[in-house]
Amino acid sequence: MEDGSPALRRMRAASPTSPQAVELSERHAVAVDVVLFTIQDDSLKALLVKRERLPFRGKWSLPGGFVRRDESVDEAALRELQEETGITTGYLEQLYTFGDLDRDPRGRVITVAYYAVLDWGQFQLKARTKGGAARWFGVNRLPELAFDHRKIVNYALERLRNKVNYTSVAFQLLPKRFTLSELQRAYEVILGTRLDKRNFRKKMLQLGILRDTGEQKVEGRQRPARLYSFTETRVIKLQEKGIIVPF
Amino acid sequence: MEDGSPALRRMRAASPTSPQAVELSERHAVAVDVVLFTIQDDSLKALLVKRERLPFRGKWSLPGGFVRRDESVDEAALRELQEETGITTGYLEQLYTFGDLDRDPRGRVITVAYYAVLDWGQFQLKARTKGGAARWFGVNRLPELAFDHRKIVNYALERLRNKVNYTSVAFQLLPKRFTLSELQRAYEVILGTRLDKRNFRKKMLQLGILRDTGEQKVEGRQRPARLYSFTETRVIKLQEKGIIVPF
DNA sequence: TCAAAAGTGTTTCCCCTACACCCATGG
DNA sequence: CCATGGGTGTAGGGGAAACACTTTTGA
Image 1 (cartoon, rainbow over the protein chains, first blue to last red):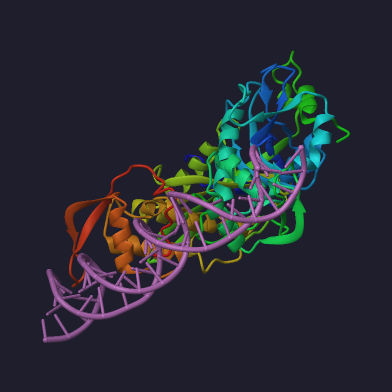
Image 2 (cartoon, rainbow over the protein chains, first blue to last red):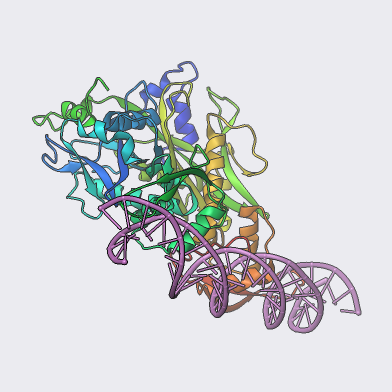
């Protein structure tokens, strides 16, 4: 306030004769943390990494790391995703930036949180061959988490559960070809609710985003199921006002 | 990737014997930029500040400034809001973090964008008495903006237009007591649509969040209008699935 | 008495919801 | 032939949308 307007401060910080004046501003450690979601055994799971050093030694935490000088924040998040799973596909979305002073006992760290939604079939080999300090946890059975990571996971869950209602994120959890029952199970697992089979199928089919591949999936001794594929390549908004849940 | 897992990198960065090891990470200039919205003359306006130094000298930009070492990111945004308008009330929400490498020609700056929604009556005096380098622009008549600020404003507009549908943000643009017509005009101005008067009033009244103050507002030579107040003190979700628009 | 905005109900239609039985296959 | 999940239709209810006239006041 006694400091003048932000415009004034910015001017002071950036003298016109020195294009590097931004270097004089106070600088911060910036990290990214990524909540990786996948579906495994009909359960929504999140990937956690065990900390082997202080602070929070032995506690589970989200995969993450500091943003480097030569990469954008998004690139840092992609890099984390790649390092954890080896994949570059899937859906990655920025969640929120956590900038409180006391988040990290080591000092001030600003974290930009992301969440990712992945098809388990795409990367399970790679994830398994990692150091062993990474594990998938059912989102309803999370252990105690380091830092404010519990808050971040909760926020990611909330966002995912919302987005599933009006976008096609749920398809990112499935392989390219999937049955309607698998799709329904994905919705149920994310939302934690049971959905009506007939209403679900009706709604999905009339959205016009599924292509019947003509193929069938035989599993066990039941009637084979039609395999569908998603017509879009990106995550799209399903409709302007149409909320999918509750069916 | 050849760098090992993020967990490993974090361990390296934070040796257990040195709680300050986070200090060794690469550090970044972090700024906040705030999109201030208000309604004035039946038009949705955003506050812009004229830059008087390079880069972008003479261009309009969002009010903003660097985050200091001793304040949280939220506090920095609140400080900006306070410096621009003198008010500490109103609604302030984090929008998105822009972290591309080339956002700022002076060097790498990560910006955490916020938007605020304010009642014009609360602060017009203070805003007017400022340096004069700040001006309100109708959101459909914005000048060319510095940096990537146009993108930020567009994003803020999108968020605001969404939130108005399922939360009570719109009330933040109005004084404590308001008429239903004023409320409707606020919605129309934000959404850029005309709404049906009868349907609007029906919906609003049956939400149960308006209290009839018993007072009336006389304006001009028309029939006086009932004055209502909002029953809640915070911005709330209006309903789980109920989208307000289109009426 | 006129201009200008405030205030007020009903009908239609569509979408969401609830709900139960037959089908195809492998064992 | 039987167990298992795949696949299908309809009726009822509720909320959104469309729509026009009367009321109150000051000038």
